Length: 467
Image (cartoon, rainbow, N blue to C red; front, side):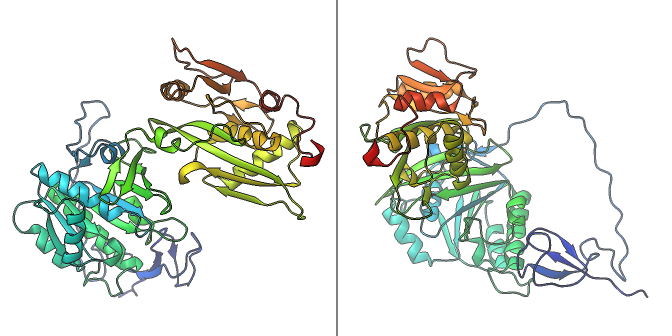
């Protein structure tokens, strides 16, 4: 009999190795390679008869497509982030820092669904039943029919879920605490997390119950455990926020049944999370329109326009290397904007410290914020406040040109609704709203913005005593 060959597979990226190694050559992660029988998962190993497959029915791309059945939580921001509610038979992974409010949000969703007559089971692997009840009392959900369990063994959880009526929603808090008898490793390891998630997803697909899995994140902001877990589930939501601020953002990064890049905004209070239907008013609530270095950016999060304030502080430095501190934006993008301002606009910032902050702890990821960041930098350097009723958006290229961005009409309508009557945007922007009473300042390049703000760019970048 020929010797059985084994292979070693990385549990993070799936790279196959001929022998074991501490570090994966594919993704660079450590201690993620385990021994795997290449034939074990097919059923054709030594002494086994290969199983004959069955032919599946082929179909065409044309034809009617039915809407996926959903469970509506009646929490508007949560339903928006999930694409219209939880889909039956789907698996949703919710990640976030410890203590950010994941359990609070899911408890409120469980209570809301229970009031609608749905059977909801909440399984906690981190807290005892008494602790979960205390949270429910604080949130006003103690009088609902949510079923609780404190268990971490996968087989026991599945046996419990199989009893009685089929649940409509199952919440597992969290996947890092799950462990199975079929895996010889400690809870929280790559093998245990993958095995537990596979079992839960299989139960959801077989029964049609919506499965919500809670996962903690690492220092880098990624969900702890193998990355393959994010590929296995149907939707991935990140619950973000700064503990120093009272609001939280539920961001969709993957959704097989709805749009991605959607956000739901919540406000944290002593009685739980309150949904914020107009996040722009929240981010602009404490704005000082007379301070230099503050520009209002009209951004988009999925299908929702969001207005947020970008704050910049430019100050002379006595150090050999100027300091760059960024909160809520990409540091590489800021370096590019500074280089373009100096190369094409004559704005000398090499001897100045630059501090950039997005108000409220909000994080901007789209390049349309380039123009707002540049306006805030020039305003701070020139010590000139920007017009209070003006918004900025546009992508800046390396040549200094301002390129148009998508969904211009939605951005301008949201700005006009909040009282902003002026906008600075690229000259070649399309989809301009009709019948608007706002004034639009269309510019071709970044030098036009500098001249608009400071009147003249030749004196920018000098020390304060020379201005």
